[in-house]
Length: 280
Image (cartoon, rainbow, N blue to C red; front, side, top):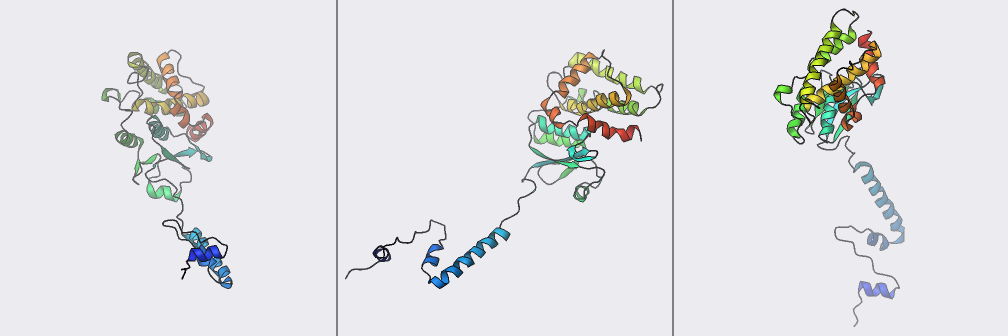
């Protein structure tokens, strides 16, 4: 007696045998095709509903930030919360990340309307704040840049201790002169004296403060010199003396770097940021 198999019966009926499911794959076709006609439609509808349910509740939402991604919160432009603002300390951190080629996500903070999530991670509400991917938020650009240097030592941006304070008084003397309403209070001379000291250092050790290679002190000074240049020309019609040739060459070298061009505020946004401080 000839033994009739499932494949034989399928060939005798003029049809192909059901396709076997691939390894690890669940095939629903045999369940549907071998069922009575009045059950096939209900089975298909049930499977469709099941798949829809999986799509609706079974897939996780995409995370806002990739795991271990570096994040940095910086000031947004005044009146333009979706545009990078004028904070020189925020730019210092961004410059450090850019020079070290560290991927990061930048979060713009409207300092006039700080979001609750930002105040939760940073109750003082100051910018910048940094998260190196471990969930720990760090404030203060001095601390942040040191943490970045330790985590990403190449290329090195370490400034020798003997040069670390070069130009450190320029920003404060600039702010005093910018806000001054008394032409005889000595604030202009104090600024020129600080710039002259920078000039002498660059003549002896330039083109950057530590010689041929840019370092952390340059990345700290660059945004401050940019503010000085833009704000004083706008509000006082004042420019860095042409006699300070090394300072001019230094700022041109800093401001033309790719990292600086990418992270600087526009002149308009910088002026808008200073306006309420100059004319309260």
